[in-house]
Length: 205
Image 1 (tube, one colour):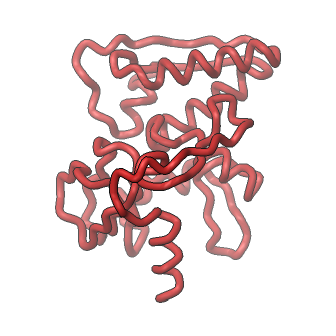
Image 2 (cartoon, rainbow, N blue to C red):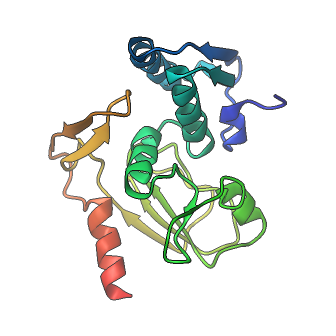
């Protein structure tokens, strides 16, 4: 591959990051173990995944990892992909414009759509890390972000939101993509949940 999966996602490569290629074996217990190892690799800022393949359970892990990286790094990507699959039967990159889910990983690539000017507004959600800044675009941008989110350009609207497991209760999907884990409210700040903000916007439309 000419560029790593993490670089293709639009992330700036950190200097001296070790580039690795992964081959994942099959088998249920091996698959669960491998996903735990993958989760740790994704958290390690010193490592960038150049390529990933697998067989059986390893192929599933490889596909979810690749989608997670190319669609927004490891920040909640497992949870987002799992919820999309449960609700629609498809991974991320889905359109509901026709009233039914339509999956097309090329057509609904956010990078391609922004470059082609396909869209009236970009709604960017980053409720966990201040590092996940929205991409540069001339399309009006609404950001639902954690306080301190790094912004390269001032958005049309910025709404501060809480972080699940810190400012409010929530759930994240475990690294095996099977179990939904509850997150406690540590009461850091009185900030709204992303779901509540989106519900209010929908109700006002």
